[in-house]
Amino acid sequence: MTDRRATGEATRRSVLGDAHVDRSQGTATPFDAPFVDFITEGAWGTVWSGDQLTRRERSLITLALLAGLGREEEFQLHCRATQNTGASPEDIREMLLHVAVYAGVPAANTAFRHAKTILADRIAEADDAQ
Image (cartoon, rainbow, N blue to C red; front, side, top):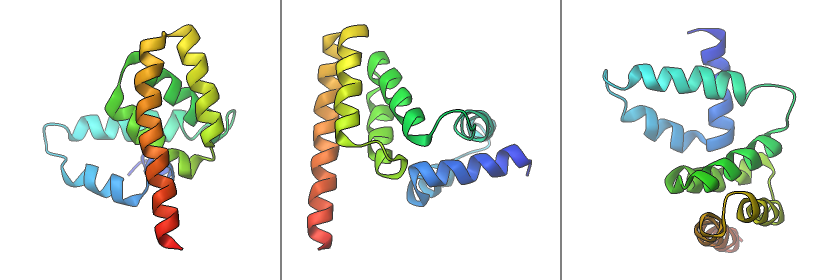
């Protein structure tokens, strides 16, 4: 395993959580294994592991791009990951207002809908844990 791969694996687990990464890797096949390596080394081992931006900042940038591009499944994944990156519900709201201005109200509307559900689930889980 390369250093970039090991770094990417650790960063990915820190941001997305062990359960998600284990599920994702458990479904890898010889067909998509090179893609998993590419993402782990490139996205997680290089971009997400850089030291110029905080994880919170990277998280908000990622969410804005995913919302603007209409990538709902990935948006939901990264919205759930904000509990690990330090992006607050208020940060998410402000970022989505930017999305509305620069990427369009329909994109932000859809992302707001997903974020509201995910954040409400997080509050409910916290209440259940108490």
